[in-house]
Image 1 (cartoon, rainbow, N blue to C red):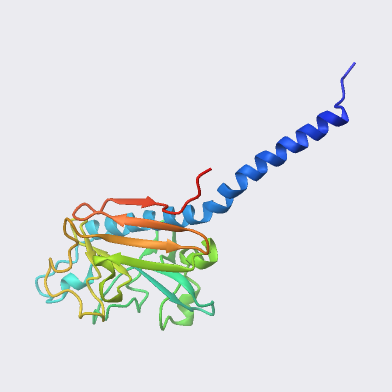
Image 2 (image 1 turned 90 degrees about the vertical axis):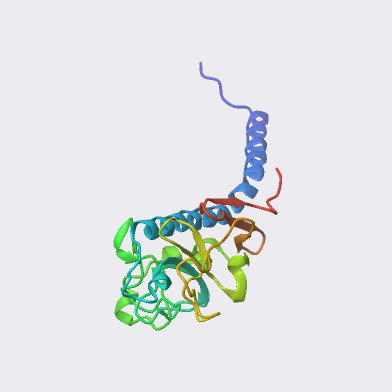
Length: 227
């Protein structure tokens, strides 16, 4: 003869499930900032990889060092979207204006080569909007409300991180703010200098620290609640 649950046992099970769900909910809500940080860190590392695999050195080009691979963040509306935080992986080319402004400059998504590693840029043609990826929209995907560069990487209001052919992190090598790099080693992040990218949601922040010389990346969550 099979035994059935008594009403008391059912009530106890429901209460236990409720307690477990209540304990897990803060972690579920917290996952968005962690997921955002993990994705950004992954793409910072990929930017570094591109810089090491695709050296821009050209003895016939006086501005070759301004064309290194970079990852840039901006709050803007592109391709009919809202004014939201996005990022792109690209190398400046041509006139080295400091901005991504051509499909020839943006990296291709390694998981989907038909897509750009970008959710859009200023002046993007309508035809190229079909190839942007919403993956790089931090506000839509993760609820990011602000991106701030701190330390030496945030000087002059910069929102771009570059890498040289050795994988060393650099302040934006090509930018309208400050005129860009003037020599091949100009704008390197040196030992003792602080370079951080802070992602924020309405409730929490994630601090991404880029180590000088090596480009090693780590993430901390300063205000994550303790369970």
